[in-house]
View 1: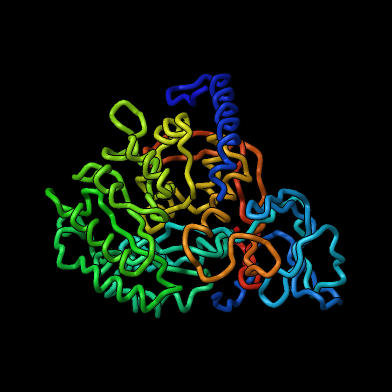
View 2: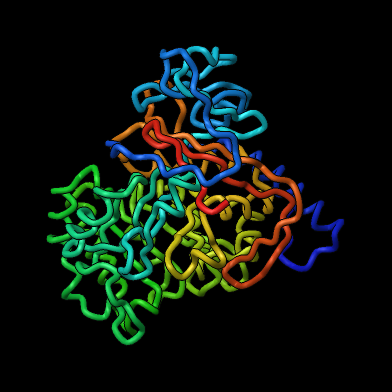
Length: 436
């Protein structure tokens, strides 16, 4: 049965949500595919703090929680032991006496630290914000800054942000050399293609491999001018990506040039973000059917990402796509200054919207851990709790109740579950939500 995109009675909505869950469960198996030392933020939470213990085999033991680790196909109560900034052991009933600190996770969910593959982490530049209050204190241990900096502004971004914050930050370079500095309707970033220098972009990326993971372009008409500037800029970011041997991410929706022309230039490992946006020239045709070129791109290995943002996620479009078995590879927030307060808030709120749409907790965690880790080469083993991986861990409560969740079209729906951050471990240090 197909998901409905019109008004539901209570009975119809419950039936449709069950149908979506069944559909997503059927599809999920096909789609499930160097740390900076940190000083923990003081606890401002009523959740139990870790207790000191006499043993010393492990630095920290997260005990009694239900572990969800899609990379290992684990969803069961287990303890997680950490030593030297790495996952040391994951097993049942690890003695508390073997750890210097014990965190009580009974009744909670324990996952790998979340990875947000579309974030804006360069404060005061474009829509950029300080990542730590929205990330490492709220379950997200790694983010990919999606083009806030370009080749000319990247050195400042690295010095002022990447090298200093507690969240692991990696970057996609904007093909526009100055990045998102000052992009306004009267000065669109693709308005002057002299700033789109593929040689310079490839050079800076190659000199900073491991930190720069790829490239970004925004083709929405808000960021371009009438004519062929958008597709010409796409050709230039393609050239940069090919020269640097790195993937590219494309922000779609509302472009002057039809989407199919951009998709034709994309290769395996590239990413389309804002896949469920409500604008024209997106993944659906005028009759609500998926474009053949979109399906072909997925077959060729192009990845599709949510990138919620202030204007880029629609329940309506999501349901139309889900009814055609078109699910996201990754779930990301596109969090920035304009969406931090409404309607995005954080990555876990975006994940909660997919619970409302019928995804299971395992499926939303997969799209923010295992799948996200495979999207880019982070230069570290993240997105899993496998022994030897980075000690990036998130602890959540899956709260039951009635929760209003709003999309970018200002449509509010009521979900029955919401993911609430309890604590985050990054590089072996514990962080708590601020102000809760």
